[in-house]
Amino acid sequence: MMINKYSFPGGSTLLLSWFLILTLVFLSLFSVPVNSRSLIIDTKGYASGQLSRVGRQNMFNRALNTAYAGEVLLGHESASFISFGSLPQNLVTNPFQFCFEKEDFYETLEELIGYDVVIEYKTPRNNTLLSCTAINELVDVYLIDRNIPLEQSHLIGDIRTFEPEVSYGVEFGRITNVIKNKNAVRSYFMTMQIGESGNKFRHFVMDDRDLYEFAIKSLRMAAMVKVYYSERLANRNIFGHRTRLFVSEIKIVKHRDVE
Image (cartoon, rainbow, N blue to C red):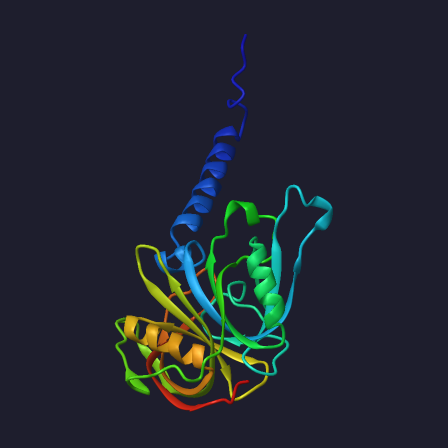
């Protein structure tokens, strides 16, 4: 007589338990808010700081790995990373790490070591850079330019979320990262070094495209700014944040002298 392997006592209960476990796993993977899921899938960003390192990775495997890597110390006189806000720390780290494969970039970056620069980057990387330890791929690099012409020094934007406000305030410092999530639901993120130097950074969210572009200009100038924000209550997401800081306006206060 053939014995059904699922006919032993408790078999149905065991199968049901496994089914429930698999269902919960499935739901946990696909029930995350769209903004959280798509955040690190397709982004474009800018990082500002002192170029501190550039070099070739894994010379022993040169035939399979053509990656170069670099690091930027965010803001001014910073070394470690203490972050506050609603941006995943693996997306913005200090030192900020990036990778590339063009030898022309290496020659340019070698000349810029020690200078304050802006790194334009994207995520994900090209397949040829998968062996690189950094998650961001270099797109372009240029020196800080405090002479960028501005039509205005103060921009008030919109906050379009319906999340309830729990607090609001103003922060003074330097914008070090600006990121655009390029998926179906467009969203913008910003990191700011609090004060004129140091290791305290805060993360913000932006709804307004004009604020995003104004933040990029402020970053490229290494300008000191006031950031006005509204802290909004949010459902807990995969990053564990209970609130998010939404930028409502940015005001340029002064420029830092740059060589």
